[in-house]
Length: 196
Image (cartoon, rainbow, N blue to C red; front, top):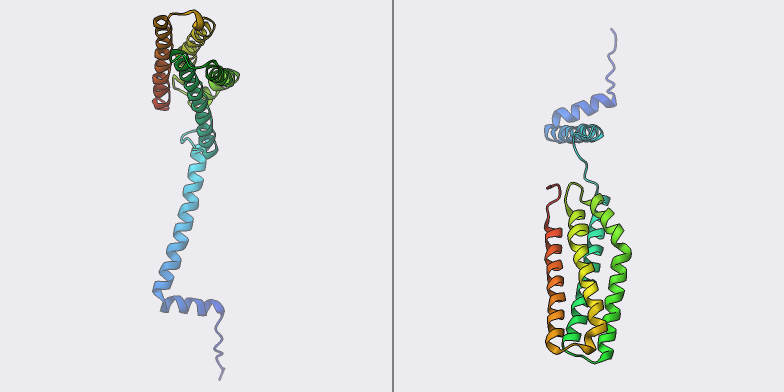
């Protein structure tokens, strides 16, 4: 009579283990299913992005846009701040040293703004496509900055000869333009992306 050997392979042991431990088998099966589903979804998204059906969100792009916007607004607010400070010191008839310091700070802020203006135009086009942000900056805000700058320069060289009423009128006119620019910047940063 032939003797039957009872040798169990590792596969047999594994199958018997899963038959006796249905919960463990279910958890492992669920894990395999989730991993497979994630891989298929990732591949599908990759294909959709490749064909332009789904737009990808580039975190570097968003970070660069944030840095660009912060620099633009910081430089604009710095320029407006020193426009206000200088003209207010003229209006209050501050001593010449205070006026000189404020005027130099205004010139420094203006120089920084002016040396970056083309970058601001191009950055608005790159980071905020399909918006009117560049048009607002180039066609509305920048001309007002230039107008206020001309008035500040004229005020600087005529302040000593002006009557108080005339000086106050000129300062208030400049500050009204700066307030207007300030409002334009709120519109510029509040405008929704993608809205034309």
